[in-house]
Length: 637
Image 1 (cartoon, one colour):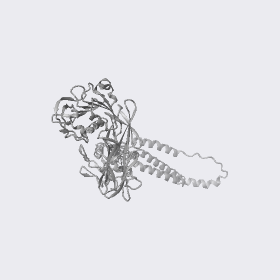
Image 2 (cartoon, helix red, strand yellow):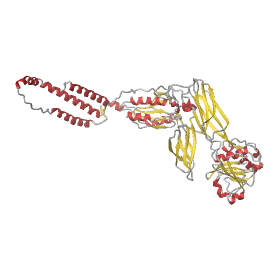
Image 3 (spheres, rainbow, N blue to C red):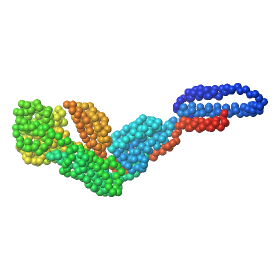
């Protein structure tokens, strides 16, 4: 027996002092009142009877004293928290990983739990209440990250509070990271055990570091969930038409991840108003793409919603909605420095959201060069500025010398686009392979620049960044080619302008939950305020002009920042789950890690605690009740 509370010497001292006080009180005799009796003969018989029973009375008082001393002994020993030596040595150390991923919001559970996560929390509480006196536990939430919700503790109240902190997310669980965290937390611990409470939709326990090896650590699995029927939105994106930003197109995909045929209603909403409503029937496992071309009416936000019809079932509501934002339609201010180019001016007229200012080379030298910071883009047509503009720039047919961001070499005859960097945003949706050019100049890009188009002699289309401003340089006069006669000509210009103003064809209409988001923001602030779906807000850090945040909920977000002029600026963006694997909610009956099957939970019995002090207090309470009963029945007095 080991006392894990107060030491034995201190317990003996406490008992000695208290026992002495109790015994002293019992030794003291009651002071009797003096009463005059006129007829003493009448009381002689009563006095003789009392003397005959005096020994029995003393024994009754001694029994009462012994009961009080026994009660005192039980209380003092309970202060010492006595435990068996074996239990001190063999206590278990557990890390409980509670799956809080999107699939755990499925509603295929029985009351009183509402979701799988609620059922998982109830299971963890059962484990907590069934812990032994020497067991210790750490509760951690497992989603796209891993979060310890409290310290390693044996306090059941503290552990239950940690369980209540588990909150649902709309992202995939990073199972390998969670396992590595648990393994580190259990390093050098006695009887280590990892308890995974999940529906089993975790994927393989393998990441960039390789397969996770649990070693000698015991792995236990508590399965949650029953149903498999679910229909989800697994793809959703939107973009404006490059030449008509009032119109847009939407692509989405609906997937039936369950084993039965489902009938659903799919609605598309623009700025909160219904744009399209359709009824769909999906076979088991079917992925149905939907394309909505040439839509109008929405200026900023789009949302897709689906709901089951008739006898269909959908157990996971988290993937029934998807969100997207259209790029903002703002007027870009463009300064064109040219001696006259009808093809250039006509191409810029195709976009009504361009505010174009024309200026001659002389006007630029006299006054416009000092005002370039007022423009989003400056286009130099056959003109080489003496100083680089304080804006994004397009250089058409640049000449050697001046402030051209790339080196311009000697003229080359009949260059062609033999090599094209097709993934670059300025050449999206363009066909440049067979463009005929009479003559041009070779451009020499610097380190970090991208040769978007090149002939056999060298680059003729280069894009890059100088001093924080983007540029595009085209190494020939478009009037000496057939490029102005092609759709690729205005697309090349508009793509470049959109790339400069972050409205390019690669505009991200939504982020994916579970990823680290890097959202471009203006200003020089080190942190910005992020308003999340539901209205809650928090401050997030800014790194290299981008707000960095690990997002785990779908919906619309707002970033509030300050511009250099001090005016507040709001950046909006959307986030979605869009994860077919997470939407496949069929629970897994077993969990395999490193080739080993996880065991079942054992050794936790609710209501049975191995702390001896609990039973000592219970015995003290029983003894108090016995003493009270015997006192009132005149047995111990």
